[in-house]
Image (cartoon, rainbow, N blue to C red; front, side, top):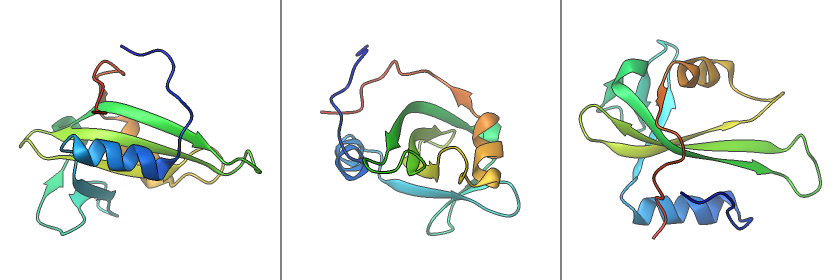
Length: 111
């Protein structure tokens, strides 16, 4: 497990996790379920695991924060979901992710 990761951008990390096979984009709907962006898959929190996560802070504004979750689902789908972090977070996404099992930062998804 890596304790410190070189500071980098959300775009770079997203490219790295996509190379590692985490290619599905997820959203949380008004029904409080997580869906693939194409609408073909839907999951409850107990069907999702957080494999890794990354927090980002804007260079000029500390309020400009985001979090990227790297996820695996019960049917084997691998992907990501992002949210603002802190004051501007989407409360529906935040509530969903609080219910998801977090494997910790044990798996390095970067190549």
